[in-house]
Image (cartoon, each protein chain N blue to C red):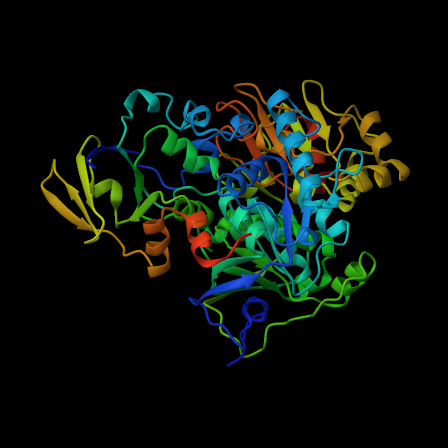
Length: 421
Length: 164
């Protein structure tokens, strides 16, 4: 019996030949990412327990992103404390304002994600990095403190569900629509505690960035991680960004999955998840009477350069509808600069949208685009929970960047195929 | 310790409801507690008394990894959560904090709002004094039990590792 890629990575990092689902293991962690919101409590945990040294400062990457640029005094104090702590601990990989970005977009972009590695961060969307064939999962602040202190963490080896995704991608359908469809099918706890492995001709054809969108939202189905077996595209992406050594693991053909779910995308339509769960996916074409107040393009799910290009193609020469507003948030500084060079930012601004600096910001109701009571937002983000982007009486509709752009033009939820040749 | 049940007949109560992100600019338990469950139940703080239990359906604590959700509940006086099931990161955060997260089937059908509850951890029983019935909760894995006994993950690692 072979092993899944997840089992192989965990076995290697636990110093074992083989692990099986359900095994409790202690695994070495290769990369510990820290952002502003969940790191200060971890520092507290270390200090109150008189643990004065991070085990390996070289493994730590700090990327404040949630409330930056600092939204208020308390947020400023948090980041100031993290800066002091990083200096004391000799942590050099610190992406401060000017080199900043949404951590799950920035980490792979800056070459900190390698296939076969283990990654943790005090953030649920850490599942993103499985798109490069790493085991990557979200944890809380106490776990973060333990990982910082010991360089290791305990895990229960998860079972894996295989999603075999085939067919011909229809026009106007993107990787976001695929993951929204998967979550619609299995529910927000459909993969609870499990690894979600994605394969098939559709996955093969997707860019590395588009794959990140799929793994990013594994957590929205309750998954422990999302993962894709590395291929040449993965290797090319990684080689362009790092000199680090890495080891490629792949699932064996005879490995054991707890379930295999086949998805045929050929008849898939652009999907919108209506409030208040990511599993409430419906075809965009059925929602065209819903008026929106805000269109939001950004986040760790869909704020990368390809997402901006897709939206700009639709918005070029068009105008954001009267009564609606659009906010574009390139996910990292590099993406911002590239979008600027390519003229995408001009397209957005000329259409009447506003472009902000990278931040998690309004995606989680932090700042820079909060919704008032009664307002509706079409958003390329990942969660549409009650109060997620502001007032508990506001509503969030999740979709692809293309659907966000098309909806901004009409002021109503709009199937993007109406704007694609 | 005896406490009463505050029942929410809801699945998928998420961490944004337990503590909205707009309050994550602090990690102080008392400050977080002032907003516990705010987007789910505006009257939560009027209902809760120290030692009470929150009862809910499936997948309690889904969404964000914010451990602030555990701290907000504990800071408000919640002794623990009893639910059909828990989201993974929330469950882990509970164990790491030595905070009780107990699983029983059909929790919100078996326990009524306002019932007085007593927990017999050693024998794995939830005792509903108001209905005079005992329910077995799903046994905790040995590792989880050990962490709870020690009072959380930090004590556990101090036990297992040597720090200078």
